[in-house]
Length: 354
Image (cartoon, rainbow, N blue to C red; front, side, top):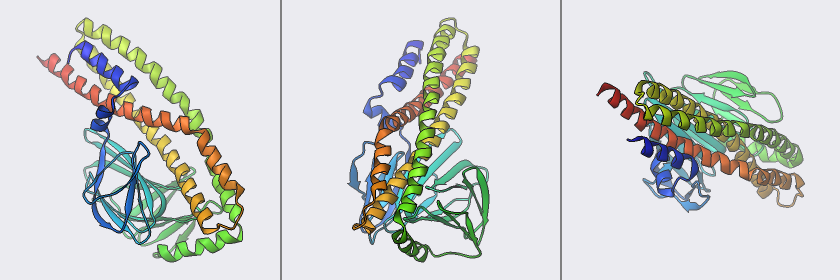
C-alpha cells in the first residue's frame, strides 16, 4: 500500500465513508438461531423490520420480541442469548486481532446469557442496564429489567461482578440481587423468578407513577451532562489525527519505516482507546434509550394518568440527537481507521524485513 493510497484511506475513514464501506466493516454480532412469534430489529439507520431465522445482526442493532414471542441469538464468539417475550436489547462491540469486546444493552424484559468458558481468551462481555452493569467472564447470567427501572440479576453458576455508580458488587451462585433507582441494592439467597418479580412493579407504579418517572428523568439528565462533556474527547481525537497524518507523510517520504511502524503501533493503541471511549458513551446511550422504553411502558399501562414527566424525558432526548449522531458516525469511522491501520502496519513490517 503506497503512501498516497494510505492517506486517502485514512481521510475516507474520517471524512466521508460510503455506505458500502461502512457495511463491510461494521462487525457482525451474531445471528438468529431460533424464533417464536414476532421479533423485530432496528438497525443503525433507524428502520424497523421483522427478523427472519438465520438473519445476521450487526453492531448497533436493537432487537425486540413482542408478546408471546421468544428469540435465540448465537453471537459470533459462540455465546448464546435467549430473549423472553416483550424484551428489548441492543448489540454493540468490536474485535481486533485476539481481543474481542461485546456490549449487550438490556433495555427492558428478561434475557439469559449462556457464555462459553473463556480460559485463554481475551473476550469480554458487558450487560448494561438502566441501573447497573454486569461484567461477564465465562459465567451464565439471567437479567431482567421491569417498568420501575429495577434490575434483577440471577446467577446460577460462578460469579458475576456488577458496577453501580462506582460501587463494585459480586453475586455468587446460586444467588440473586436487585438494583433499584429508588433504594439500595437488595441481595437474595437463591433464585428469584423474573415473571413474579416483574408483576409486582405495576402496582407499585400505580401508587405513585411520578416518583419513578422523576427518578428516570434525574438519571437521564445526569447522563446527558456527561455525554456533552465527553464531546471534547472526540474533538481531541480529530486534532490528534491531523498531526498523525502529517508525521506519516514525512516518515514515509524519507523511507524511515521503523519509525513509521512505531508511530502506527502507537496510533493503533490510541484508536482502540478511542473506540473504548465511544463504547462507554454508547453504554450511556443505552441507559437513555432504556429510560424511554420504560417511560413508554408506564404510559401504556397507565393511559388514564396525566404524566407530564414523560414529555420532559422525551424533550431531553431530542436535545441530544446531534450528540448521538456524532457518536454513531465517529464510532464507525474509528472502526474503519483501525482496519486501515492494521493493513498498513502489516505492509510496513513486510517492507522492513524485505
